[in-house]
Length: 563
Image (spheres, rainbow, N blue to C red):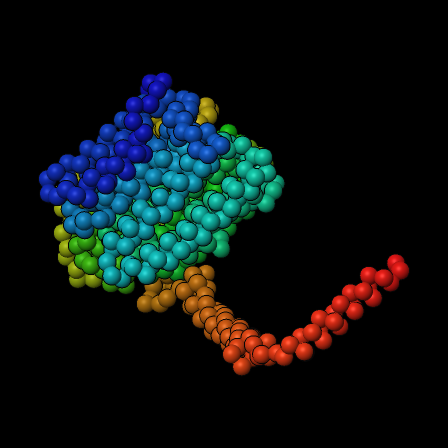
């Protein structure tokens, strides 16, 4: 790592994505792998400190600020872009992968942003890139992409309002830790939480992500919510309200994932659940908890991408996403089954997988602070994760009944991407020291203790037992689960139509009244000043002399009246 910056890695990714939109064939495939590989190297050329000062109005923007927290997120973002690009090497849609690179580059730019204005610019550019990724999913994804964009723009407006209020109140433009102690800071916090998938704006994620293509969902799982985790780590560490928000997200994601039938929607709800663990750690705010949140974000991007790669492979080969239409695929897709199972074990924090060595840091931080209720709820949420993602997803998709489908494993590039991330899941679980070494704070934590391993295995064992005992109730049918998105997809539409009717009626009445008033005024003017008006008539000279005499008399009376 050097003490200066060669090229901004985020801008490199954005530029690479724009170039890729105009090339085809082998050249495009080479750029798909070369651009993120170079970006990953560039991330580690950014030293500690601020680089790239830019003067904007009366502010000095800090375009790049390097430190340990920024580098760990930029590292996993660029690594995800590289392996995700390998998985999407066969994607034929012209826009998706270039848009994904712009999306990833914007996330890296937001991570390195040293001031609030630069952060906001990359934040909004992320919304554009991610919307295009969803839009590339086909005609059925267009409406979902517009709803997704609507939520992002709403969050952006709230964030901009908070930043404006913060600066107007004399706040510093530098993006540093703050507290939710004023309206502008609350608005900034809410703007961050919208992208994190926090309540009540959680439904946009499972509404939009599964509508993307077999490869687009993989990219979407990595950047938006994890960038939100990063800005919460940077901006609001130790904010107590985040403990409650995070716990709600962890439970919410489990409930809806258990009810869901679509395999990609199961994993989308699972993203909210996992981000809930990270948000809880940020709310706890100790060095152990913040390290745990950062480490879990790193591990989550890998194993969630792996799960969505396995689901995407099934979708790519079968064209089906409903659990009720799948089953028995282990017979013809053995590699996809193994990789999907590894991802399921990692998200469940099974010993010797990456989730075990990261999620446990957050639980340990809660125990160290004697937050017994938080610790118990996190343990319950961990059991729920094993129910919906650790068992339900692989069981209904790859095992259970024989659906009669016999698809083969996907093409080589997709298989290699799954193998690479499977190796990361196991490698980090067996040997977590390289990950611990790049965390924001020094790590004094040993995940593999006898009590911890035994307690986690007991938790997973009883969760698995509960799953098979309740299997008859957990079998999904072709149902629709209502979520808060109903308000802006159905009720919101009706309210908008009603308001349109009321406003249109009010405007029509206003325009009618204004037109009548103007018509009357015109008629009055014409009556007095028109060709036949009173003031346009010819007056006799004698009458004019009389009126002048009367006015002169009145003037003399007023002038000589004693004051």
